[in-house]
Image 1 (cartoon, rainbow, N blue to C red):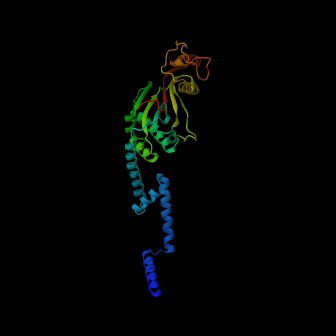
Image 2: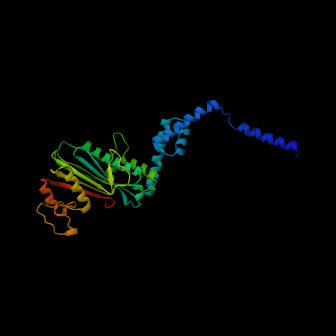
Image 3: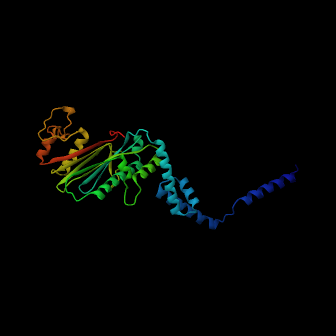
Length: 306
C-alpha cells in the first residue's frame, strides 16, 4: 500500500472518530455538569446508597430527583427481601437489646444478627431504635384508661407487623432493607412493654453498649438490659435495682420474708445480696428506703430461642 493510501485511510478513521464524538460547548456544558453533580451528591446523602446506583437512578429518570429516590428505595427493598429469603435460617446469636423510655412507660426490645461486627454498625443500631419506637407506638395506640401496672410481651411475628411512625412501613420491610444493606441474617426476637401508675417509676439499665456515643433521643442499646417497676425510692434506687437484675439474673421476685440460702444459685430477687451493697439483701435495701418492687424483666442478647 502506497504512502498516500495509508494517509487516506488514517484520515478516514480520524473523521469517523471525530464524527462519533458529541460536540461539547465549554460555556453550556459546565453548568449542566455542576447541576448533575449537585443532584448526585444530594441523592447520595439523602438515601445512603452508592454513587453508582444514585447515578444510574438519575440517568434512568432524566434527573428527576423524586422518581430516582423512589426507585432506589424500591430496588433496595427488592434486594433486601431476596437476601432475607436466602439468609433465613442462619444462626443469629449476636445483636442488641434496646430500651426506650416514655411517660411512666418503658419498652425493651431484642434484635439479633449473625456477628458482633454488624451489631456495632450504625444501620443495625438505627433498626433497633425503630423497633423500640414501633413498640412504644403500639402501647400508645392500645393503652386503655386503666391506672394500674401492666406488662405486655411481644413475639417476633407481632413485632414484624408493627410500624415505626404514622404511615411508616411495617418492621418486616425495615428488616428486609437492613438485611439488604448489611448482608447478614437479622431477626426481630422479642419485646416487652411496661407501664406503671402515677405513684410508681421504672428503673432501667443496659450493659455492654457498643463503642461510640449514644444518639440523642435514641434507644439505649447493649448486650443486656433490665426494667424494674418500683413504688417509692426514687430514680437512683430503680437504676441500682435494674443494674442488680442485669448482673445477678434473678428468676422470681420472692417475698420480703425470704432469707439468703443459695449463694450463686439463689434466684429470688429479694433474697439476693445487693450487687452494689453486698452486706444487705435486696429486700433489706428496699425496706430501708421505704420501697418495694412490683415486677422486673431481664433480657440477655441471644438467650431466647427463635
